[in-house]
Amino acid sequence: MKFSKMAIAAVAAAGLATAAHAQGVAVGATVYGPEGNPVGTIESVADGVVTVDTGKHRAPLPADAFGEGEQGPTITVTKGDLDAMLDQRLAAANEARDAALVETAAVITADNQPLGVVKSVEGDAVIVTGSESDLNLLREHFAVNQSGQLMVLFTQAQIQEALAAQTAAARGGQDGA
Image 1 (cartoon, rainbow, N blue to C red):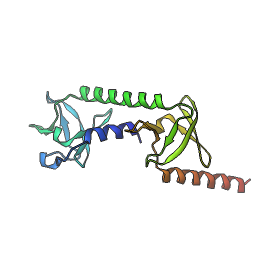
Image 2: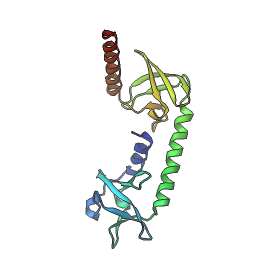
Image 3: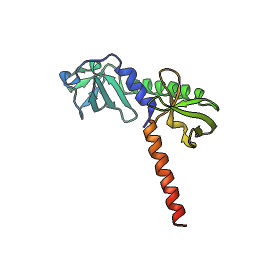
Image 4: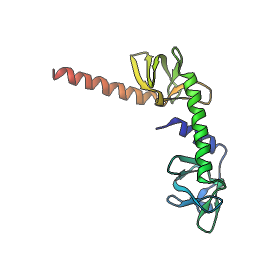
């Protein structure tokens, strides 16, 4: 799961209340650009957000961004333009994450619970010291939330499940030795 893509969806969806179905936008439909060239395929429609798979990105777009052309749903940008905009937003989100991902930085979970502090960052390997143990994570598991806080892309419950599974696996390995 890529948080930066989720963050882009949240930005694109802000303040939307338009029903995409009213405009003929449906899952599986091909979306066309201003010159009539295909931009991508509609992957999902939910809560005023239409996700278009361009082949490179899954682009969350506001439902009211779509018009109806002779071939089907249309948007005002080309596939290349849409991919370039998403490349820029992803680069900016990754840049913000990398700037915040430093030793001693406080980390919260995706459900806004304190997790611990960054113990070390070596390449894409990140160790977070939590209340119970150290967590080995990857750079891609982090993002900066809307408040500017460094967060891991998992909820507290997901982390606890993973730790429990890891502990059980370690115990199983010790029992068989």
